[in-house]
Structures are given as C-alpha cells and as structure tokens.
Length: 477
Image 1 (spheres, rainbow, N blue to C red):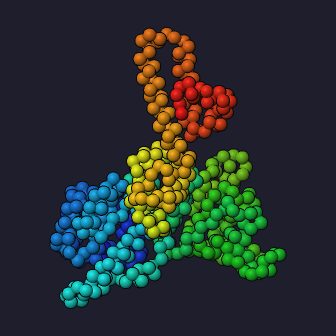
Image 2: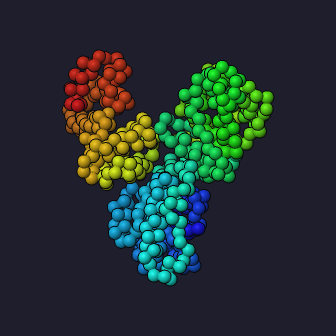
Image 3: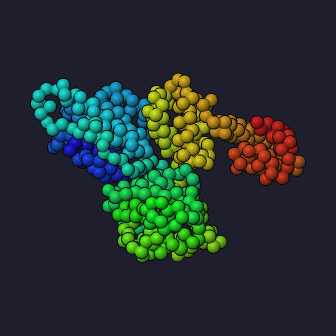
C-alpha cells in the first residue's frame, strides 16, 4: 500500500482528502502545517506529498525545497488556489510533479496521483538497487482498476465552506436529506459527497430523475415488477429501492411525482419494506434517501401538489445550494478546473483566460450555474486557437451581457458625475429631476432582466421603440 502525506492547514480539506484516498487504497497521513509535515517525513518514508501552497508557517516554495533536498525520492504535488497558479507553474519547474487547483475534484486528484505514481514507478525501474528493493508502488493499471464513485467540491468562498461544513456534519448520520437550490448548482455532486463520506460508501449510490418519470412507469421504476404482472412486463425488473439497498437512493426533482406515487413512496419509506408489482413477497430495506429539488415544496404542500407527511419524512436535514453568482472566487477556480478537463478531453493546451473574460465571468449572472459555466468553458476551449481564451469565443448572451453591463455602468457613472456638476445651477429644476429618476428606473430594469429590451419594455409599460429612444437619449448602448 502506497503512502501519501497531506500537508494542509484547512482541517476539513485534509480530512476529506484522507478519507477519499484511503478508500482508494492508499495509506494516508495528514499534517496541519509545514513543521508537522517535515516531522512526519523524518519518521516515515512517503511515496507522495500533497502540499497546500499557502500554509500558516511557510509556503509551498520552501516546502518543495526542503522535501526535494532531504527526500529526493518523494514526489510532490502542490494544492493551489486560482490566484497562485502562476507560482504553481514555477514550482513545477523547481521539481514538483504537478499542481491541483481548488475546488478539489476526486477525478482530477486520482488522475494526477496515478500519473505521479506511474512516473515514480518508471524512475524506480532505473534507480540503484537499494532504492528499487523497497516495496513497489501500485502500477498505473492497478490504480485504474480502483472505481471512483463519488465527487466533492471544496471551494474557498464562505458559501462553499458553509456548504462543506453541513456535508461533513450530516454525512456520517442516517438522516434523510433535502438538497435545495437552482438548476445546475451541483445537487447530485453534493448527494454523492454525502454518500461517499458515510458508512455506506462501499454500497450502491443510485440516482433517479423523477422529472422524467411518467405516472405509468414510476411505480415500476421505484418498486420493480414481476414478469407478467401487467401487459408489457416481459421480464422481472428490480426497482431502484432494491438496487440501492444498503446504500443511498438519490431522488432528483422529487416535486414532479404524482400524488398517487407519493402515497406509495410514503408507505415504503415508513415501513422500510418494498414489494415488487405482482409479487406477494416483501423485501426489507436499509436505504438512505437524499432528495433534490429546485421547487418550493412548501408551496407545493399549500397547493395540494405535495404530501406534507412525505415532506417531513424526507426533511430530517436540509442543505441549500448557493447559486454560482454568490460564490465569489469559486467561479474562476471552477473555470480553471473545467479548462483542465476540457484540455484533456479535446487534446488542447489552452492555459489561461484573458483579463476581459475573467472580468466577464465574475460579473455574469450564471442563471445555469455550474452546469452553464462548464459548457461555456468547454465551448471556448474548442474555439480557442492560441493559449488564451478570449471574449470572441464566448456565447453572445455572455459577451453581450458584459458589454451592456459595463457600458451601462459607465453611462450611469458619467450621468451621475454630470448631474453633480449641474446641481449647482439646476438643483431645483423639476424637469431635470424627473428625467434623472426616469433614466435611473430604465437602467435598473435593464439590469434586472439582463438587458433584454423586450422584457424591459414590458415591465416599463412602453414599446421597444420608445425604450430605444430613451436609451439613446442617455447614451446607453
């Protein structure tokens, strides 16, 4: 079993990485700072060190120098934030094998560690006898056999840290969990993370999209059926509850289920037994249920669309997924990760985003959240001819948003400056005051609808031509 040392002063990150790597066949130790990490290296030999670039008592540069000087046979991978990527590249030139950016993704971690071990294994083959006599690391082929069944995200924003704390609290329990949030915020990823950090991690994780189920098929999908139990039942089918037995059942968009299916679901959840359609045999269940929705289930209860008793069965713990626009610096961290994945997928070597694109990403509303960001980065990577993603590779709705938003802000600023200069002579001018209020209202509504002129005209109760004329009057392009 290969030994990995994690040096990170964020206890949560170290703990999560330790659990994940242990489940994937590694022996893992953790250290909370550089000094503790060097003490670990003195006491024991490690095949690989995962070291955070920013530590409370030192930084990645000094740690790399010390490790390579004292323990040259130990590989080093740097964990870095978006703002430290340039430095991470310099550290690779100094001898680090690679770097991993936050937020951390298990697929990226496992791939990077696999490659590091592959490189180390090749070096050992040509190393002196006293080194090659040590136990050999797992070969890349063996590592690839290890199945990655979950994923997690560790960001640096307050919203991400709060989210992780909730996952850390609820994962070891058997509580049913409701995950709330907009579409594309990563609800299924959080459900997998809860599962992978629970005692059910080695059992099935079964995901079910309730939004795609018809009323006729829902019962069969949930509970299964026996051959011949109804017309078209040509074979025995195992339902999702049985498939998830011992593990976790994730129900996405549960608010779309019919009232009749909700009643059957309630009985199964209460009694912890399931019976296939057409069978008389009841099967005992040990299933943790996690549900996700972007709807307001309380509103559904008030309107009679969702059963209140089922809601309270599910709602032993709730987690709110913050929208991407509220996650600050996580936006560019995620963009960097998606860029790395897209480079591997498309065999490209795009290295960065232009300053204009960074500014655009940070200001855009991201109505589709993480899913939208991922698609935008993949598309931009495909269209980029050089090493840097430029504005021209972004979809029009994003590049136009950036242009409209910045020009609007600039015009508003110019307008307010001009207004301040004129106030000395016209502060009692009622006509100017009315025009100023009108212009401010137009600008506010345009921002609220992402500069969609048709929607803005409807809200302002004017036609598009009038809106264009008023925008022209205040030099708003």
